[in-house]
Length: 284
Length: 173
Image (cartoon, rainbow over all chains, first blue to last red; front, top):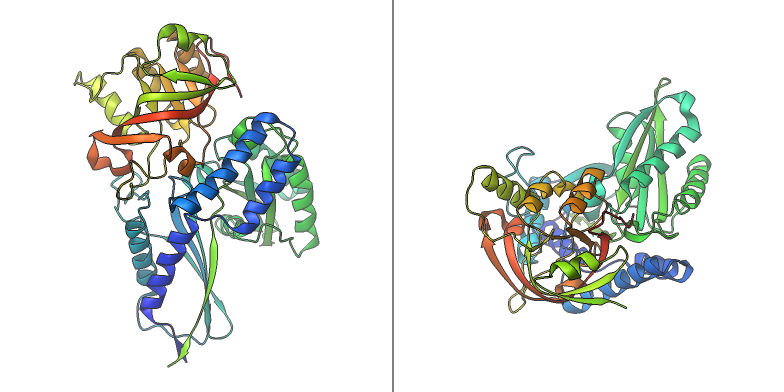
């Protein structure tokens, strides 16, 4: 059996939060720069250049990229040979609390949707667990902003709606959202599963690398067609027009009921902050 | 070419703004987002005194990150404006003339902007680090219990925005 020290978890989460809120991944910067090069609309070009300049300032001056430092979302893959003699969820939330407090980050979580009382340390995080072989633990973390999350959608289509139904629903979501989710977007799409699983698939999709293509043919072809059609909607950066509405489209699918065709669209703003860290368990 | 605007912005200058104009604002602006708007409207509904005089003022929809020691403010980009659509007409009726936020607003709100000859300016979302450099001072003046959502009086210098709804009711979207 193998163990991972509790303090290591707390510190890793803290460091991941501090880093992701201030630095954009190099692959996202590359994608924004290439969009700037391909964009014809002058306002859109101006917005893209400011977004690129912003990430440089954030890094140099050690200040968050965006004031919405989000709700912390984690996908945790746990090696089957690991044992935990402490509460892992509690350790992750301790890391969140320290990270948001010491990192001068905004606390954007309220205790109850109706009483709206701020928890003052940005806890709790939204955490999903899964198992993998071996003795490692892989942490995928993203501080997810509220603006793009608010514009995300779910629809239970029927099998007769088919592929065209999915495409129409995605395009409708992005057109209706306009500038509100802070485009250019990364569009995470879940298809199949059931009511709750499809949203999980969509969220997981935005964690995929920006240049990664789906392995399943149907999903990959959807990604290609949707990216092209989304970028013809003329929503553009911040909704002011242009051909840069999405930087990437990611489709994740799962088996589903004979009666169902669930579709979920999770939008990620241009401040696409995320990171992955692997911790190795020590023999216990 | 950007138009330089100093606060308070007079009627003539404000009414001459047209959609698509790029402006640089210098002077005093007040921050307020969801919870502060709810408080302001409740105060108006119950005839209480407001924490600041709305007449001719500018409200910026933002909830900044905490300032590091020695800095005026943290990251401070705009939040989505549509969530304030329910509250803004009451504030405009009390003299609010300029709103700064991001994204589209409802048709009803556009009609209200026209009615009050107000303007809605859009700042670019997600560039809070860049925008923080235009903020020279920040002071919480009300609702400090709301944390990031408290009302702050900001002094800005060349804060960049784009005219998204003008006083004639034209919109950029």
